[in-house]
Length: 104
Image (cartoon, rainbow, N blue to C red; front, side, top):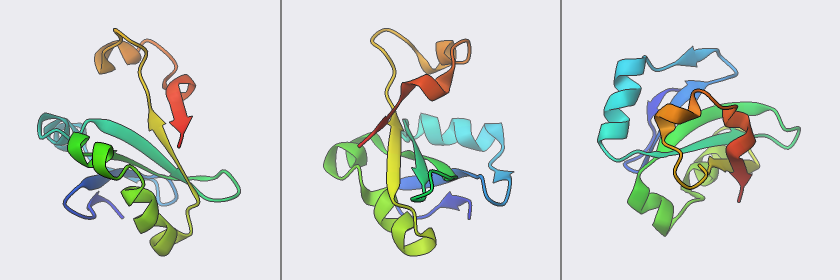
């Protein structure tokens, strides 16, 4: 399951099937304000999906991707990437991204 699921978020990587969107497509989503990165897990802490949500949608309903994933795949947890103050996504490549995910 890749690509736009709704108007407000997109799945960029399906960890179960091993598929991911190409870098150019992901960059286009970032340019279109899909800038909050999330991960969806099941109750065994298995990572199912990585995605992006629109900034405004995150502010309105950060659980929208989880609502979809609960019905689609039985996911029970969503973690969002929260960058420390002053760290850009480009600089994150030099750090361990896994250290900066926060469970809602």
